[in-house]
Amino acid sequence: MSVLSVCEWLQSVPWAYGIKHSTWEFPVVESVHSLALSVMLWPAAILDLRLLGLTMQRRSVSQVAAQFLPWVWTGFTVMILTGALLFCSEAVKCYNSPFFRTKVVLLGAAGLNALLFHQTVFKKVAEWDENATTPWRAKLAGASSLIIWIGVVAMGRALAYA
Ligand code: HEM
Image 1 (cartoon, rainbow, N blue to C red):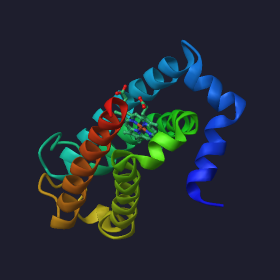
Image 2: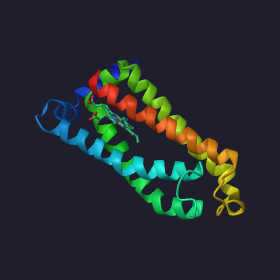
Image 3: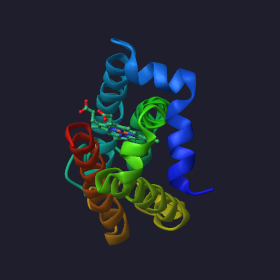
């Protein structure tokens, strides 16, 4: 069974077909998907800018993380759930789309970047927590995260209009 035939089956399942073909379901799910983006993106960007040493320099990195990460996780969870619904309703379009494939790769890269950051430089955060200037590895993680998330959003938008 090919991935394409799984996608064809998925989007023909009654509830998935219903999302795509109802007048309001798809727009509502996509609107929630987009609104959740604003819940997660700005807090993520502020944290990334703090890692770059460009904002909130008088507050420690762990304070900024504690304040903003719950918003990032809340928005991210809603994005994944609504994204999965959107995907099921138009799985073949997504499967065939280079934008969607790039978005999935970038989501993986975002996860890997966060994991590496937590496994390495963030483990020793106590040593540089209060510093306005952060270690180069923290800067690299912040810059990579900003670039990756901009890419994810761009691919999402491109997919919607493709
Ligand atoms: C945090 C992660 C994500 C971000 C930042 C994101 C971002 C976006 C954005 C900005 C759009 C365009 C919305 C619009 O123009 O109205 C979009 C659409 C879409 N997203 Fe996501 N997304 C994420 C996760 C996911 C996931 C995990 C999936 C699937 C498993 C997914 C599936 C889709 C689909 C299918 C559309 C296009 C809907 C259409 O054809 O109009 N998204 N996404």
